[in-house]
Length: 216
Image 1 (cartoon, one colour):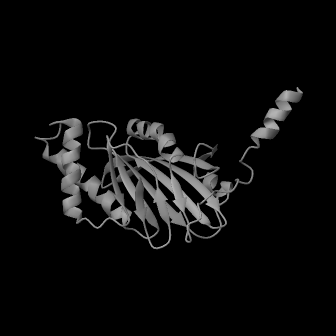
Image 2: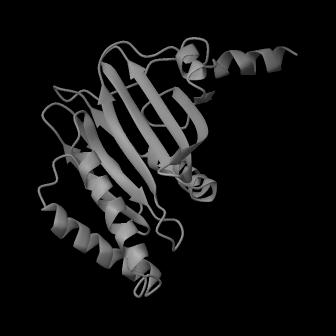
Image 3: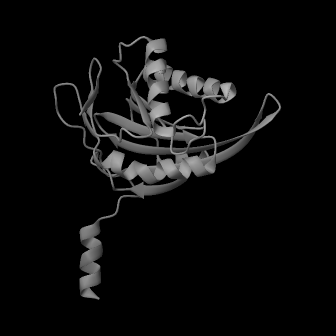
């Protein structure tokens, strides 16, 4: 399923219908119309769980507007909300493109991320960077978990970011990311498919590892 086309890049992929709201950068639907449509979909998933809770409905609408607005930011291809639980606390997932050389692994670690190799994507080898932080916003304690799946090549880079305000919601969304990433395909200007390069100091040569095991 084609998700989005912008002036230079094209993205194809498959995402689950149940529990996900997706806005592409080329979405032309009016924001209020899109939010109303997604609210109806939320009700089909969770019934009347929020029907009498106006605070929850406001939170849902704010999350949906954030998703819509994010999709139209520069460099963004797709923004999604994932609602794994019948609570107004979705995860936000954004797929963006970038130019220039990739940040080294050390830069992610210096920024407070735990960094691991990620090889389960059709985009090629990449990084999975995870960080958590607690802040105080307007006198309220706020928790934020962030995961960045980073794929870089000479032609440019792709980053898939997951953010959530509770660890439980975050973990449930991360559990679905392997499926989404395994189906994701991006095409560069001219139609060539984006393929990430090996990450210096991180990407394993599995063939060499198997040879060492065989020689043991």
